[in-house]
Image (cartoon, rainbow, N blue to C red; front, top):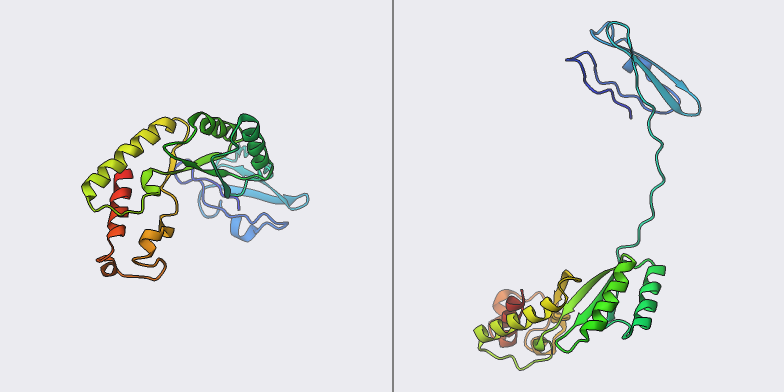
Length: 222
């Protein structure tokens, strides 16, 4: 669809031209009689339309040819893989990053825990980034493995926050997307009290202290 833009205080009128092998002269022509500008349109070549416009005084108005349409650039699929701690050493980290790039994977989900090897983690992330692959982190405080469900909720929340600050400060210059804990919907302590995926209403969690603990942990981490 080609459209003339309104210029010179009403001299131009909108003209829609279907760029096939035919110009709809009845729709686009006769502008001089309707007050203002005239347009001389003709089709030439295999399906290409050319437009010559003149203003009310008969002076031609140049219209540049449309720029050629570039072929769309293939994009990587918006999917990734879980690589946990990465390759474990620089050589394995590079092999993993190269393989993901070859398979056009866009992101890697990794674990980061209080005992994680920070140097190896950073090395893996940098090698991924060199291929344009983003790292997303499952941030795991000690509550990932603590299923005792302590009920001193204010203390739990503050402790979870303090642990999270320490973890994030170690890697926040290379990673910006974080998942709080790992697969919290599959925890055995909470599932034993209220099974997941059952559509349980809020009232159904009233007697589930492990969910209260988990809520305090996640609130502190966020």
